[in-house]
Length: 262
Image (cartoon, rainbow, N blue to C red; front, side, top):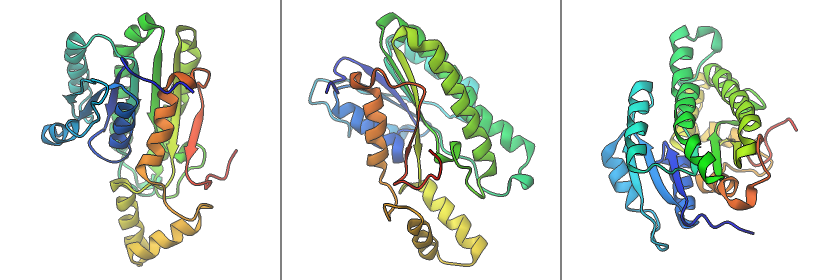
């Protein structure tokens, strides 16, 4: 199985923590030159130094706040003047605050749409030309199992995640002829800061401790536990590899079997 990414360059968004960071680590171990994208420059500086360089990789970082789409576009354009060839893009952005959808302000939808779908579109438009030229491209979007089964209490997130999944499927149909695959990885409950926020929200709503809420949630998972970021990252990394050349347009849950749909 060809998992070698030596000589390939990967952009990984939201990559100073959680699933984004774990994905960057895996891609570096497979030989890729990894560029981290996040808003905190100090965290980026600290994180980039932890990535594997055994195959002579050169790792970089880009500072960009995904709440500002114009700033994201400016940052990626400046980066591409320095590094014009990109083979892998991992789109990953933190989700919005939870709560009933009926109570959500319209601006929450607009801001989340910009942070996720609009920024994804800007990044794809920026890097696809170099993927087409190379005849090799991998676009992986880290979304959520809510794409298949909406999650109670995450109304805005459910809505926008579904839009991103449809966008990605459409993109896969257009780019396949260029050797570019587009796939979505759908994490279930994973031990990240996002999960901590969900536990805190449900704890307040239900009058139970976060530990009690966590036990209830784990009991609903066939594997009996939350996933680790590294387990989700393994799926991301495989989809970025040469071995996954014929996998495109799919929504891949990494959730311990919890999602109730096929």
